[in-house]
Amino acid sequence: MTAMIKNREEQIKCAFDELIGKGNLGIIEATFADDYIVHAGDKEFGGQSFVKNLRCSFVQLFPI
Image (tube, rainbow, N blue to C red; front, side):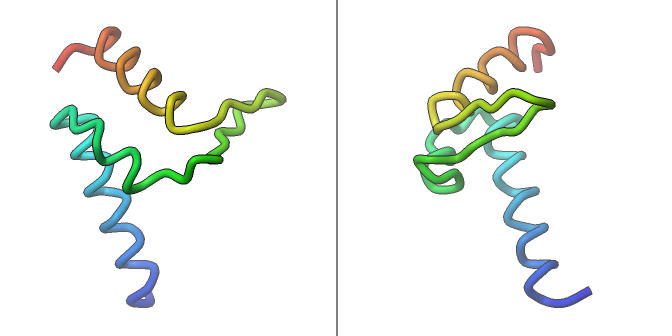
């Protein structure tokens, strides 16, 4: 595994832990671009606000 891939994997793990595990919504602006797009089947969802809403919905469904 190259150092670049390993570094990216660590960034993703850290961001996930901060966002889901610790509830740090501030990590969204540091991690996701303003024009971030999520592709789900034939639908697209976008933006940092979508990520914030997704995180809040996730925690309501699966309380920590």
